[in-house]
Amino acid sequence: MECLNEKNLEKCTCTYEGCPRKGNCCECISYHLKSRQLPGCCFPKDAEATYDRSFGHFARLVNEGKV
Image 1 (cartoon, rainbow, N blue to C red):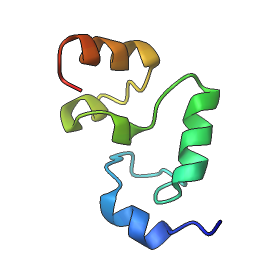
Image 2: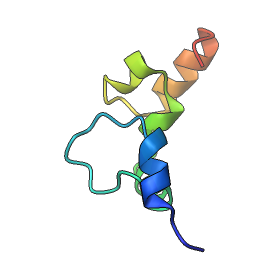
Image 3: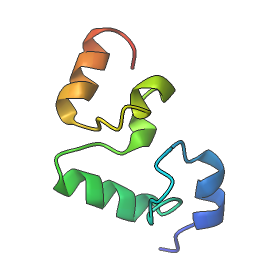
């Protein structure tokens, strides 16, 4: 499967400037899951900006109805 980096970049919400995985969703998801995290695109904008990508943070947002 070919990665559509250019198309993915149009929708990527990651605010981490130095991220080498921007636009490469397969690598991004794999990287974060290895760290028991979710990628930034799973979070609302304000929550993504905290860089807390943990499962626990995501679960709290779901419980609060923010996701």
